Length: 110
Image (cartoon, rainbow, N blue to C red; front, side):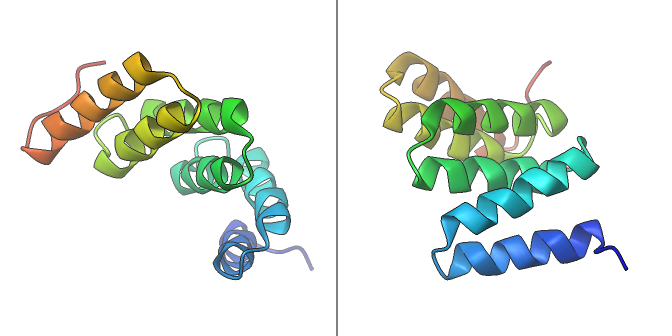
């Protein structure tokens, strides 16, 4: 019996919660391979990668999350954090600005 996307995601979240980042990353990767439109999978994969210092890939996941949901406040906030950790301050400020726009009820134009 194959696991459902939600089961895989839930297992990966459990791994993340106990600090098992490597297994969480494996699970999240499987999620986005199964469903490339799975926003939560991209978001979580990016955050887990950021925790392991794989910043370039984390940023790529964060960008994918903002493409899938351009008006998600958490996605822009997380992307800003990823950029800060990678030393990309101008990009971090841009992502933060988008989060601020969303935080006051605005929308991001594609």
